[in-house]
Amino acid sequence: MFTGDTYLQPDIPDPVLADDVVLRIARRHLAKVVSVTAVDESGGEARVYVCDGDIVVKTQRPHRLRARTSLAKEVLILEHLAALDGLAIPRVLGYGNDSDVEYIVMTRIPGIALEAAKLESQARNMVLENLGETLRRIHEADQTALDESSLIPGDKDGADLRERVASGFDALIAAVEAHGSVAGMDLRNIADVCLAGLPVEFRPVVLHSNPGAAHCLLDPRTGLFAGLIDFADAYRSHPAFDLRVWSSLADSRPLLSGYSRRGPLGEGFEAVRRCGIVLTQLRDVARGSRDLQGAFRSIERLLDES
Image (cartoon, rainbow, N blue to C red; front, side, top):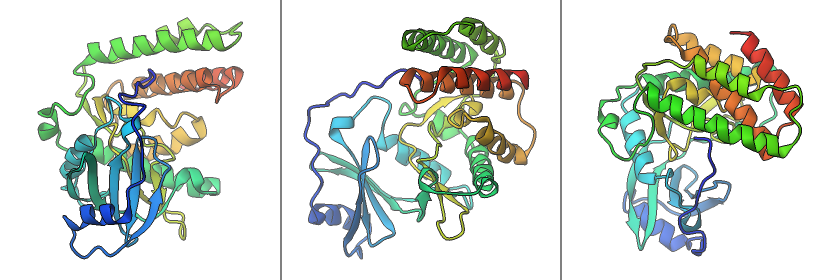
């Protein structure tokens, strides 16, 4: 998913719920909840109310409602993945609507986001390896029940993947060229090389969508991986696309190492992973958060590894 989001009702008010409303919602599913202990405003599409330190009431922010975000989808996926022993994700306690407020009540994974942590490279690599192994377990989960749901959009086959990726390259190359000079960089050739490596056939799986540093939690005392949160943007595609958000080579390597612990990767996996990272690098340039020359050097090194 590389195009910009369109918010469906951007002018609707976005009030913070009163404590008594949050507690009423929480107590429908957990009677002994006592108090609201924190409000987390960091989410783009959701607001999180923490109750008693270990329970979360997550609500959809109405002014940030978009087509690909769905709390109902998140509930479906979390409940499906709950069957996997030891998987570090929230556990759903309840879901519903209260006076037009859509919500999920779930357990809280204690910890801090990796983006807020200061770790030495070895400790960071260990977190990324554990995240990679977690993503592999999610992708290898039985997909039967999820395949039957209309809540999860995405690619149905290799043709869908190729069309979406080609469209992403077209849009991002145009945006990068508008952003500044690309002299000496054949972005179209890079796109063609990436597209040529995409598999014709593969088994789509449900992806987290953005298992990045904001959603990867770690224990602040030990620095160890604590869990993965926020599945509301999940979609269906090739499993390698979940690794694309870690686009720096320093981060992508330990992530891939952890992902590979559970066995060999399927044919075409590496080609799709590289393609996704290239797209992410170009997206960051188009957004102004990455310099073009640095991105181009990184892309060249990545493609040289193939």
